[in-house]
Structure formats: C-alpha cells, structure tokens
Amino acid sequence: MITNPKMKAYPFLADMMNDSYFPKGCVAKVKAVLVRLCETIEAKEPKTLAELYVLTHAATEEINDLEEAFAEEDSEIETGARECICNDFAVIAEAYGFVKADIEELVATRDW
Image (cartoon, rainbow, N blue to C red; front, side):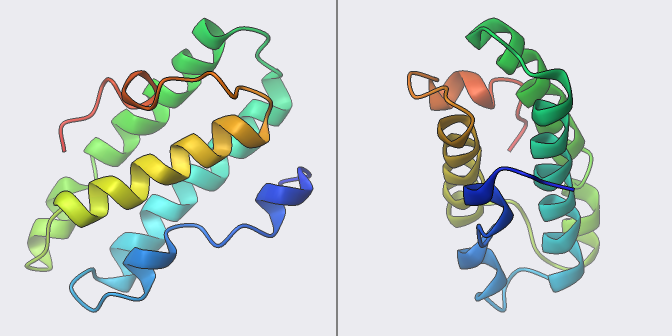
C-alpha cells in the first residue's frame, strides 16, 4: 500500500479515466503499474535520480507491454494518454522528493 499522503489520495490517470476513448480495464492496468511504482519507491527508497530512473524505466516498460491490450480494444496510447501518463510520472517523482527529475528521462524507455 502507498503510504505517501499525496500519492495515497492522488487521482491517477484522471484524464484517461474520464475519456471514453480509453478502455477502463486498460487504464486500470496502467494505474496498477503507477501504484506499484509508488510502492517500489517507498520500499527501495532511491537516493539519486539515477536510482529513481531505474525504477521508472521498469514501470515504463510495463506500460509498453500494455499497448497491445489497448489495440485489442480499438484504442491506443496516443498524445492525450502520453501527456496524462507522463504527468503522473512527474507527480510521482516530485511527491517522493525528486523535484529536478526530467520528465523525458523518467519515461525514456517508452514506446508510446
């Protein structure tokens, strides 16, 4: 469970959840990745940006693996989804004290 108060109450992927283009089941899978990322950050307590990026790259690769699930539902991780997901990665980084994290580096392993 997430213990960080900001992330515990955070509405992950709110824009995607409110857009009928994105299948709710697929969005829930992306949300689960982001929640696990928070839990992993809390468990491993990265001290440097490099350590954080290792964790965010792994989460990004999990999201990469969901592209097919979106396609099967006649959807995709397109511009709006990318912005929403990247924003959540930035919020997560900031919530855990990494205010200088580079958004592009957080998701550098993305295929979307």
